[in-house]
Length: 250
Ligand SMILES: NC(=O)c1ccc[n+]([C@@H]2O[C@H](COP(=O)([O-])OP(=O)(O)OC[C@H]3O[C@@H](n4cnc5c(N)ncnc54)[C@H](O)[C@@H]3O)[C@@H](O)[C@H]2O)c1
Image (cartoon, rainbow, N blue to C red):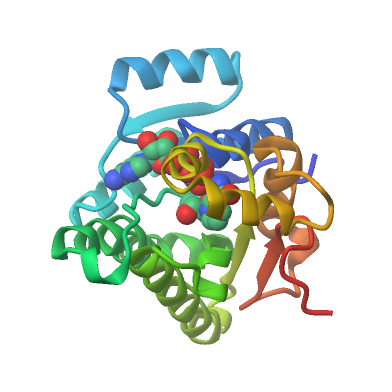
């Protein structure tokens, strides 16, 4: 098991790709603090189903609130005594053409995406330094390609890539690796977007050379687990395009 004895935090772990990561991490032997906005009782029920006696706990926290970053790290330490891996997966946003985009949309995307990632990275740093741990952040083809109607999301995602590269440089000497996954996967988030922008969704589907959208647990989570594991000990500052070949860099 690749993540045996590792303790991880997964934001947005109650749904979509995050839940796939939680399942995979548990299968790989990690202990996981799942952070999401669903009510505490629902999260506890989910953990009871997913973890079946393995090491996992749920914490209801809105990651866009700055003060919550410290509380999230403290809860992981309280439950599991250390922190090896931070997965900044959660990100909420609303799509609109640039001319219809509001300040509220900017605040939502940067609050849950860029600032939440940044605040959690900073709060986790002292603990990750102790364990020589790693961070996995989330990018998107929407940012890399500049997809229409995604201005606040695309900008936040590219900002996350920028701060990840800076942290990969600054924290390499502390033994902390920082990488990103840019996924394509069938999730509630994607389904919501597909309903609003069916033509753009079809373009994304048609643009996947491997011919299908990824599965959160079986296609995306293994790549996150690899980056979090010691197998990736010589990788930092990288974005792994886990998108069925939609974006090729070879
Ligand atoms: N699904 C894709 O194809 C795709 C493509 C590119 C990038 N991504 C990125 O992958 C990650 C996961 O995407 P997904 O499709 O699973 O998303 P999703 O919307 O399906 O799930 C996101 C999860 O985050 C939680 N969440 C939302 N706001 C939160 C907050 N303020 N605090 C805590 N938790 C919060 C939600 O409750 C949900 O469980 C995101 O960073 C997303 O931008 C996904």
